[in-house]
Length: 165
Image 1 (cartoon, rainbow, N blue to C red):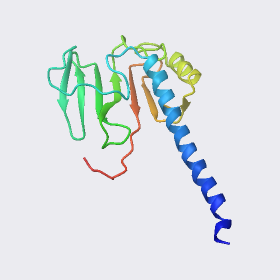
Image 2: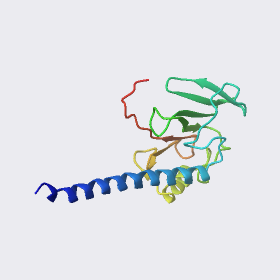
Image 3: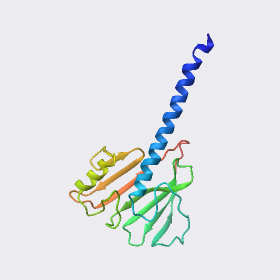
Image 4: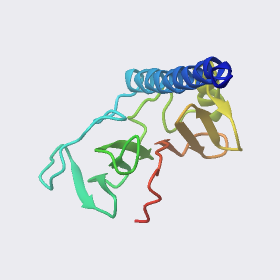
């Protein structure tokens, strides 16, 4: 009689494992598409050397649980922190720019919001709030009224241990 429930329980556990793996695969796919359509110096979810002589016009600034790479002109920054969990190895987890030289899915600062929204929607992103577009663990925020004044992209990370920085 005890074994009567064993098969359904094992089936549910295997389904949960495959579903979780499918989500991870989808997020990897979404991040790969983002990186393929981004002309930045650093790619999302990849490691960056952590040192003060990074070069390339970026200034290293240490932080708590992360570090930031700021462009010399102050228009762009990358945040490098634990990914996929905050306690994992440091990888690029966010990007913010006010510089029109960076293209994401074909749009950049200075373009119309309408063109950026169309590009994001075509990639599968959905509008969650006025300026927020989401696909998996990727969060795009567009700033500006008719034209884009700045763009932020952030990868959601987990905090399994409840760490406070």
